[in-house]
Length: 286
Image (cartoon, rainbow, N blue to C red):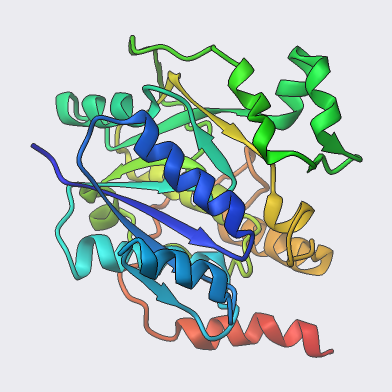
């Protein structure tokens, strides 16, 4: 039987993190371990929840960004421990039934190295079920009633595998990686601070590695849609976004979907990560 770790990065918004973790436990029959990176300094509420529930975690004393935090999860999964699978999940999602089990079952029975689930987000919900709009406020869909559980109206999931070959719909909100991914692709690139384009970059490196990948169309999850920015303490920084886009284009010879460089850029060390991060953080000081 394979060993699977569920890893999550949080940045405040404890109610969403709790719902995300509980949704895993409520919808799977598998034995799983958890590891959480608390990315917001002084987030005592999340730390208390993790301590009270005996969930292994690490707490950052500064905002080191999402890529650095994901690398902490990789270290816990594959340097400090020896898990077969890592399921990386967002802290503002809800797992629907069969999603976790379907990904693990396919990983155990196939040579797919990356298996992503398929999101159903808040905009999809309101479009399909207009009566749920009352539970969200404004253009950012700020949640006004978490107890409504209106996302449960969606029933478009199934225990029957429905595989979309080579389709990586979402590699960070709910995605399973086998250990071979870390061995061939390595760590995320912390130059994509604090978050923008990290998923594009990692997906490009996975594809260029030649590993077999897929998405499970029957494995669904609800996505509240960027709660850290839209309903939390972080803000969208357009300067970071522009710089990360420029860095991506320079790295791959084109924007997302227009890349011309086919090399697999393996990052097998975390040396000088903080130097790279601090170089980008200096943008805030100008």
